[in-house]
Amino acid sequence: MDSAQREEIVERLAARYSTPAAKPSVVAPIPHPEDALRQIVEAGASRFGVRADRPEQNGFDACALAPPLARLIDHTALKPETTEDEIRKLCDEARKFCFASVCVNPVHVRLASELLSGSSVRVCTVIGFPLGANRPETKQAEARAAIDDGAVELDMVLSIGLLRSERFELVEKDIAGVVAEARRASRTGPRILVKVILETALLDDDQKVIACVLAQNAGADFVKTSTGFSKGGATVADVALMRRVVGQSMGVKASGGVRSKQDAETMIRHGASRIGASASVEIVKGLVGKGTY
Image (cartoon, rainbow, N blue to C red; front, top):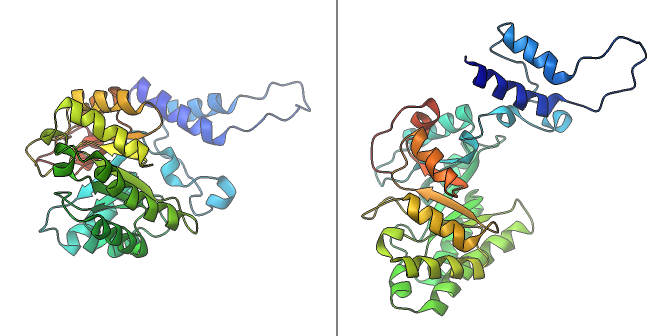
């Protein structure tokens, strides 16, 4: 463990364990919690006991001390041949590494929700995937079913062909329909997030800007680069453009081709607030993943 890693651990622990100092009853100075933690780490401690089973007392669970990068990753398995055993492995990895969510196809939402019950890992699914060419009412029905099965994040593909046909009102209404389903469910449960997949590889810059504005107007929470199933994935230029358009009022998710820690950190520096990747474990381990998503 190098000095930078030690300091990162100390800072994260200090942020969780520090409390307002009581008035001292003796003359001897009371060490600051961060100094005490630093001494423990420097003395060789590599693990800390945290009562993660009592979040109501501590105000956090074990994932609260996870590396920040892990908490920005949607651990993803969207290939059509994905098996239930692979979903179980995905969820186990998400728990172990404290990823933000697992992103799975609708058929696997209920299983993922059961496996991740009681954890801080959210369940994400896709709507109108991967073409975005479903009718609006079909996407709304997909959204309702996914929420009923336990999804709390919906990554919907916008109507790409209608966008390119300049049917902007229809595109916005399509997004707004899914947002309405999410907001309706949020009244009686956790807030449901909607991320709008632009499929940037199929759009020019003007169309990307328009798509971001339409998603923003429709009340979506994020704009997202790609499905990972088209001719290209996330690029730094697209992420930066999307961030400029939506400002700080929305999230930006970079997905498609993010396979290393360097890739992820580059996207974050240029405005991404969430990363979609199937190589999530390799990313947090500092390795390079294989595949195209």
